[in-house]
Length: 90
Image 1 (cartoon, one colour):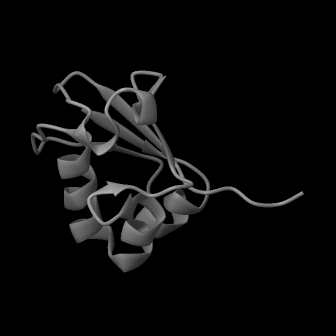
Image 2 (tube, helix red, strand yellow; image 1 turned 180 degrees about the vertical axis):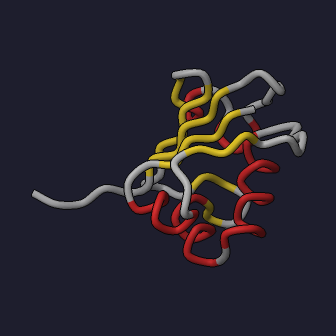
C-alpha cells in the first residue's frame, strides 16, 4: 500500500510517500502504526483518540475516508492512502 503525505505532514515524516509493507486491516490501524513511527505531532494531526482528527482529510483510493467508515475504513494491500493535515491561512 502506498501512503502519501502532504503539506506539514511531509515535514513531520520526512518523506512524500511511503510504501507500507505492514498490513493494516483498517485506516485506524494504519494511522496508529504511522503515529508510533512518526510521533506525537503526527498523532495529533491525524487522530483524535481512535477516530480521525476533526480537521484531517484522508483519501483512500481518491475517496474521502470520513464518508467510507472513518477510522474503520477497510484497507487492502493495493490501496493508495493520501493524508492531508489541517490547512490554515487566508
